[in-house]
Image 1 (tube, rainbow, N blue to C red):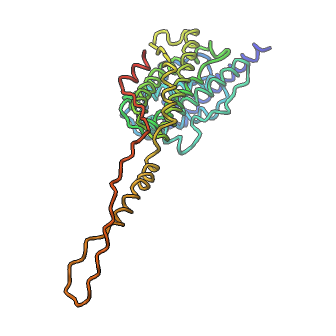
Image 2 (tube, helix red, strand yellow):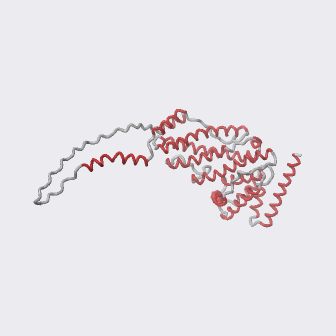
Image 3 (cartoon, rainbow, N blue to C red):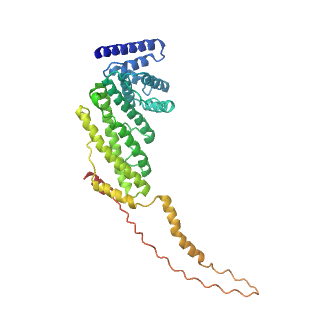
Amino acid sequence: MAGGGTSIRKYVGALKDSTTVSIAKVNSDYKQLDIAIVKATNHVERPAKEKYIRDIFMHLNSGRARADVAYCIRALARRLSKTRNWAVALKTLIVIHRALREVDPSFRDELVSYGRSSGQMLHMSYFKDDSSPDAWDHSAWIRNYALFLEERLESFRVLNYDVELDPLGTRDVDTTGLLAQLPALSQLLFRLISCQPHGSSSYNTIIQHALSMVATESVRIQTAINDGILNLVDKFFDMHRDDAIRALDIYKKALKQAGQLSGFYETCKTIHIGRDEKLLTIEQPPASFLQAMEDYVRDAPLASKNQAVLAIEYNRKPEEEEASTPPPPPPQVSTSEKEPEPEPVKKVVPRVEQIDLLVIFHVTRATAYYLIYN
């Protein structure tokens, strides 16, 4: 009975694909593109043929008009929004993911613009194919995969560069930039780790194809985080308290995610993902270094605004002393009146500078690197 139901579902899916192709041949102004999209994202539960994906990418190269790129995105969005079949949804997401990696950046820019205007391009939180237990497992993975791609676009908006394609920007950025970029990278890594497959989805060939791209991108994301953490550590022991608290939270989260990424890699290796790619070896820094950071936060200097208030309080006493010192006598004027006797000059006691008892714990770049890597 179950086998008969599966056969009927496959037949219906193939009929839908052929009908859509026939309509595109008659009614579409972008006939070749529409046919390529349908064939690259059909109901067949196997990876798409490379020929059809290349046909789509031909309409997305730098020489094409932006209107062509926008039409392609709308066509892919329609495909996603109308389907309830896991194979169609997953293949469509793979086309989008590969386009972000392989074609002109105008596709990414147009996709970001479309997402802002429509708000529904990759929002697949409610997608499910409950036609079988395997389809249910696949649907769960597809939802996480869509969230990762959505976060990938969001991170580009925050970072202003593509982590996978552009030079990484966390190595030399200032403290303000680090405190903005590292949380965005951390959220992107969180979505990536959530793509760890479970159940039957671990052994599906289409999911494994998508997972191999995800695992490859983890290397660049984690490298950007590592560079940012080293930069953060180098600046940490000069930070004011508010920034130090945020930086310590970022550092702790990075340690936790490093362990989770190791688990993600172990899962990938069990299903032969990443065998040909060089995945990272994750090493944890010593616990003593984290303790040193926590000790510094407790005694870190206050933020600049509070320091300004303290400076006003500190300088108020000398100003009062200057006010109590009499001004020089006015020039003598010849009058018949008796000149008043000058007031006695008050003795000004020199102010003794107070010694600052706050000990600033500072770790140089070389020391920080040693603690982390030794």
